[in-house]
Image (cartoon, rainbow, N blue to C red; front, side, top):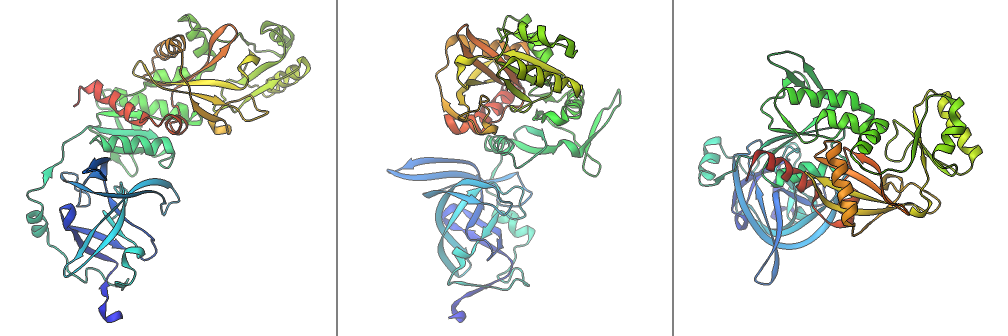
Length: 456
């Protein structure tokens, strides 16, 4: 039996004639179950009554200038767990794999492999019964020269040059960050993940710079999308301000992010712009506790840490005694707090409006777990589609404008007095709202950048 099998090294060159790919380097990995092909701009369509998928590929690693447009019958959509543990839904195609004189049909998933060393991964399902692997060898079936590659690809289309966009954030594996990177790439842009902690800057009146990992100067960026977690607001905003000094367009400005993170100041700013909020109190001394409680209508009431986020540092005090205990406990830690009237009729629900470039592009209702009053998705809250009123849309747009945010998650609560604004988030998460509405929110963020540059 083994005499009839193809012997491959750990790396080999192959082709996909039905896709129009004359040659591509593959990682031969018997440890991987499925095969995967690099693909961007992936889009399903119907052809002669059958489901197909079209996609683009840069077949040569580290060469974004050469692009091939491909299409293939769509076999399935599957959840695939990557080697890093990330679960991703992928399209599956079936096509013919060509190793010179050896050809056979295989199934492959389509995914962006820019961060990987190979455009193609050959897994054991595609090799079973046909291949033996010698992991100590490479290119047992031959290797094309650079001249051969140029000849093979001389007729291929040159990729359209997009914008160079940086995503300034902390965790590349976070759903929101992966979606933004994917959305930018699918729209033809050059996306770079910039880890905040690996950036440092040079302050200079004539030539400000930002350096990255080992001294690389971050230059020629058209735009940056800041996604700054609250714990590193100061440094993340300093970097954003530096990009602004370098004349790079930032989707949310440093000043807008900074003021959105100051709960007290942001509420004062919103009130000055005529946006209604629940009655709120703020004090600096425990001696003011009694009057502070009366100020917001007594118990039950909400106590919020000014530095809290995603529902953390938010406590419901159901009695006056409980309120006094919580307020004094926070004050003894020298923590800045707000007290706010509790809107009982909201029944653990709030509305998240996602505002991009002055428009509400999506909205969901978030509902807290039983026995919980905080509706945050991160705390186990559920999301569902909701039709927001024109008044709620108006409040969301007005709030984002007051905060000078091009991208904002605006949280609104329905009360007996009408809609009230709870909070404005400058780095709203995408997972809950994209999952519930099935809308491409990340793509809308990229479109806002394109609009700024009048890019088509």
